[in-house]
Length: 278
Image (tube, rainbow, N blue to C red):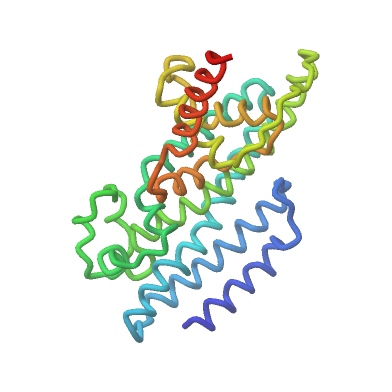
């Protein structure tokens, strides 16, 4: 089966022209990709209806890796197409639409954070319940109701959620690139001067700072997207934008999730004590 899935994927890539695309695709290129991935999914669906898994490991690999890979492509290009269609409206309306999409995606990431952590950690202790047809998926506390309405032979509900996570992470990067020109224009219109401050710590530390500011309510009483806070910090401190979603997974995996904040506290106290002694 693995050889068939690899060949099917390669045929899709060739038919879609995706290997030649940039991240900001034209509407014609995007429709070509949609047609190609739709045809590949139809073929895969027919194949799976007649296929009998040869082993437990083959079944797990299909539902955990291969099926989400195909579905993620379809979700991504459909969403891009919707965003491209919205380009006919005014720049202000389109920007609000893009910002709403970004907030919705970040909420989806937050909602499925535990599943993301499970996958990012390379765990497999729940695989039977998450991906096997006879698994008791209702016992998994971080799955929602949409998990149980899909065709188990073609793609499980968990696999569909994984596909959405993959697609939305890519879509978020696409949205950021669409919003980038607006950010440049806003900066030019305000005649702002580049900040003389440079961030010299890690991206994960900046992420920790952004979440601390968000949860503390120190900015807009907490009524602000953490991605916005992180982007502003990156702009002020002349550093690259961080991947908030991925970095939060790293924060959860650390023994001390507030390592940078704890260091700031210690540095503040030490600095104040030293200044008092002068």
